[in-house]
Length: 145
Image (cartoon, rainbow, N blue to C red; front, side, top):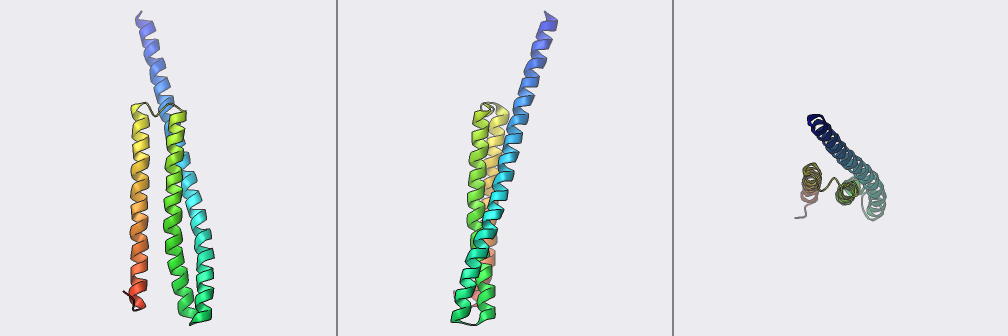
């Protein structure tokens, strides 16, 4: 009887450990994919918007100042939008993976999901702080308030 109880206990512990590992792997994969997508989209958007803004500004005014300001503003805006979208996708992917693996209904699944949400929110808030820190000196340097 004791042997059967011990075997049942170890089987349950192995299943719980596998579920925790699966949820952690799904979360890590979703966050990595979201971050990679955010970086790729941010660079593409920043390059496209920066090039268009710099070209239009250079034709209208001085080439050097317009190029620097256009690239800086487009890079800041592109990264903010792409990071927010990428982390929203990463959070959605992590939650979907947790639901699919049925690990969301364990304590470890809840902890992983709320950890992902907290990390995504903190990173998005940090990205906004960086964007405003980059844009405000540019506005004051141009004499606009």
